[in-house]
Length: 518
Image (cartoon, rainbow, N blue to C red; front, side, top):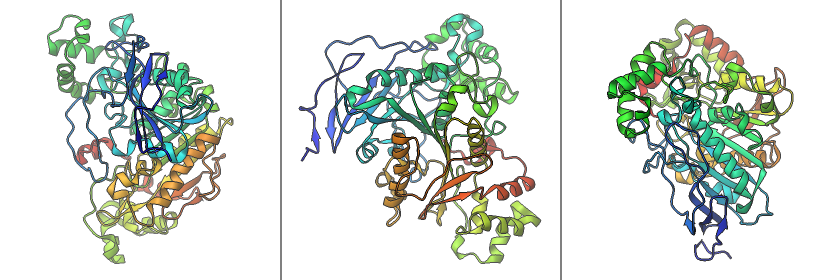
């Protein structure tokens, strides 16, 4: 029987950058903080110079600096790990079940959330790759890359050397995938079978990478979790950086753009936080996300998919509540029909009974009051993206919806990030997700779908009912809940009704009200 922990007997591995030594723990070889690239501020990533000797990679690397200090909140719902920050953050972590260059295990690469401005490869406790690696018999990789003004600030009007500064955060991810392609075989992985998956901003990055030619061939499947937004709700960056950069120079008292390369990050962030809101209020470009150019073809819902993208099988999913973080001020199990109706009237007025009837058809097992928390950010755009992809006719695309209720705040419905512990097999690390009689089975079903998808290109496995791909107007959705089932176009009428009654959803107003981080 293998030892629980072993360092001394773990072999040294030769990579393109030099020799590495990790450790073994509970069935996995683990390597943390491997540098995959380096970069000057606002510049494209470059290969790491070959180092001498053996690099010990048993500690997580720096994460990208953030624009403001993190404030722990909502840690029961989304427990975090806060970590030292540095601009030199191009590093990745690997968990592998075997160190054999001929093993050709499927490679599963996690791209973290936090929009394009925050987060890290280890930000959430649930991002740990050990269980997914050992139970899925796969090589798991998590990556860090540049964010916010370091990764996404357009300085191209000020010089050719800044030509792609608006997208260097994405270029970091391409560099990470290139490093994986060149090196993952020595960790037991198959460079020709790489699946990328991400949640929230990480899900957006999965779609974005499908729109970057230099990433072609570096990954072969994609899974998008709560990462598709309506362009009207989550608009892409437009314009250029002339106004925001000029404002930064004036605020900092600089006379040349080059001075932005050497000022301390936190002074740069202070200035950006000061000058950017006024520009944003006028609709001007302030960065903080990728910008369409010759390098990046733009968000697919706005620009359409590149032809190569259609060759990459997709899974797209969301959760029932997404941004409904605030606690309910009532216990739904104690409500009678009249009380439920009274709760809905401030939102739906004379349409409340009609809404209750439509909701009962879509979600017969849920309480009618749950409609107040129904996601209007991700589910509808996810279906639109799936249909757009299916129309390409080359590769399958599968839809899911995670609708579990949790034993928290009066049976809280699934919120943004609540499916992550299940797909990583880490519900034991997130207390609120450790539900007796539920978590283990649902974990196997959701994680099993990721593993099956990584191995075969289909999320179907024996633990789930048959899960068809999207086809034409047929939108089969796997419901992940205490009972998993596939339902076809089941919530279309409900959303049509809601949209006919309520004004367009305003995510920014909701986030400002709730003051949430994700």
